[in-house]
Length: 395
View: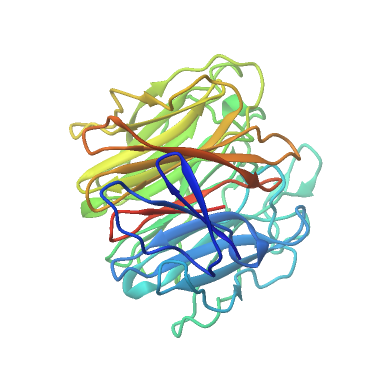
């Protein structure tokens, strides 16, 4: 494959099979196509420097999730392993319903995703049509890391999973899965949706029945994703979009200091829109800082959480005019530089381009920025940081 190395705004094409190892005073940004021409990449770098990648391939309405790893920051990847035990039980349509990846204790891999229309096992019966609803599925890697265990449905008290959920894991063997859906027996409508969390204390071997994360009547934007992140000391952070009164589609940040048993939260940014905008979020760490990113009205923002509570007091917009910017993602290098990436021009059944801006450790934009065509339909980008201070964007 061809790799595009970006230094500042200059593009240099290299005929190489992987990421560059060039070291400069300014961060080098390398664009790298997802293995297997997959879409919807999720990438995590563990403490040993191993890159773990999840991607989707196949028919968008009923395809498959694949897992690969790289020990050389993307120069080579392991052979792909299919995550979903039932062929065609994953979905990519709509961009925000795909798989999420977390690395747990001893390098265990945990994946959660919205099940397709044919996925088994099915969820609770939806009283609106008297049919079993779509499941929120989970699978973990086998002890030898060479396969994944059979997929399981985590929804037992909730139904109507739509927008994508998320998964997180900590170093003590806890695994957390979160999604939004209606409670069994509750009224219909986005303003009645709740965000749910299912907790595991045994590395994903079993999960407790899901519980609502917050009782504030915010609702949840049905076709928007959410993002869960396990920070230092097993503190959990979550970003999601509300749907109160059907038009208040605001971004909320939640925080838990007791391993997901309870959450506190606050509104980060309002958005008045009488439609479902199909947005996704991102959470990442930079040293002791926790950073979040989201979209509002065609513009993408990021900001650091407040150490004193679940707030992002000073959001920063991506440079340039708002328009069709979506799916923001974050990565921080060892120097504290932050790469902020997003898509431009993507929409329903339409691909677009990836854009990025590097910010220094003080939060100021640098001259390392760029944009490149190539985001496939239903996809987005996934940035990771290199030990030498550079970045790789998988797309």
